[in-house]
Amino acid sequence: MKPINLDGTPKAANCACKAVSVPEQVSQPRRPLPWLRIVLGGTALVAWWLVYDALSGLSRLLTYDVLGLTQGSHLGGSVEFFLYDTPKVLMLLTLIVFGVGIIRSFFTPERTRRILAGKSEAVGNVLAALLGIVTPFCSCSAVPLFIGFLGAGVPLGVTFSFLISAPMVNEVAVVLLYGLLGWKVAALYTGTGLVIAIASGLVIGKLNMEEYIEDWVREIRLDTSTEQDVALTWAGRINAGLSAVRDIVGKVWPWVVVGIAVGAGIHGYMPEGFLASIMGKDAWWSVPVAVLIGIPLYSNAAGIIPVVQALLEKGAALGTVLAFMMSVVAISTPEAVILRKVLKPRLIAVFFGIVSVGILLVGWLFNAIL
Image (cartoon, rainbow, N blue to C red; front, side, top):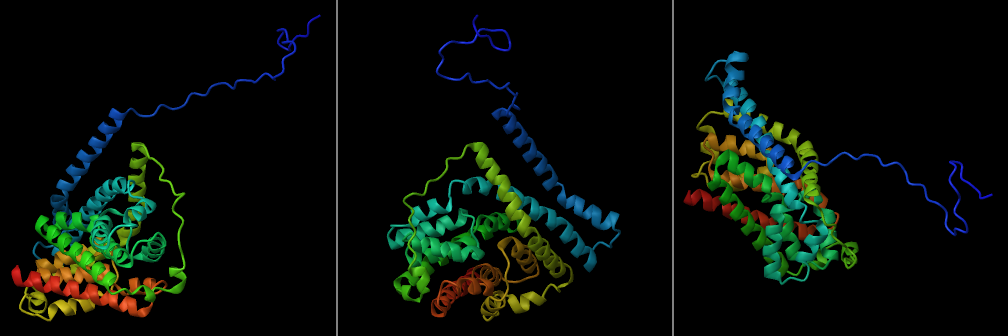
């Protein structure tokens, strides 16, 4: 009698392998078709634009009809400014960060180090300044970036070009300046910021100040030969954009609201001619004073731009205001504290001095020609 299985079927004889049970297939949720994603993305973009376009009328409606404030009053002007600029800036910031988050998925820190390492000094400075525009680093990231770049063989001057450009000429600043102040201001700020980053890096590189890097940093040499970039699908890059929105907008929105609140106060209560008298073109000393005021402060570009907008509306000179903004985002005191972990005081002083001179020249130049 042949052996049988429990279900009544004959057992296979002399089988060297065990039978493998096949689990019951579970239906997986179907992924949205590419065209559906495109339609959903396009619909979201249209809805974004409709809301953005209606913000001006909504802010006036809320200020004067719902809240009942008097049109033309100091309080009414401040509240309207705040209710208009807060959603405007946050909506712009969300859209920009999402798009740049996708771009940034092509520029990982490892790939950035490989691009900068081994280049000639001049080419490296230009590449470093340009990469600083689209890479997700601010002055708070100075310490790990500095260590990683030096360990990968990136020259000191090239590293400084990157560290100046990344916080000062980042994509958020450029697009918000375009949205709030127009393309001319955005183009002037971007061009001069890149010039400062490249020139400062070249000067620091020529000074040969590697000895003023902390010893433990100079001893580090990173082995990047085994580093591999993971290829992302477009779905993964879109997820990277959404993740950037959660991380960046989630962190900077309080700065944005505070900056807009300060700007609203200036807009509503500052006399028209007051700032023109102390921050105008005729006061040569206004540029260095603006830089000295900006250095102890700390803010990212998204938080300081609403203040810049309000200062310009009240008569402050463009060169003075841009010098103030550059000093806040590029050479703040908190950045010096962070950099002290890897740099000796003399190199920090040289770095701040060179960048400050560049900012002063930009401020005076703009005030003279505009």
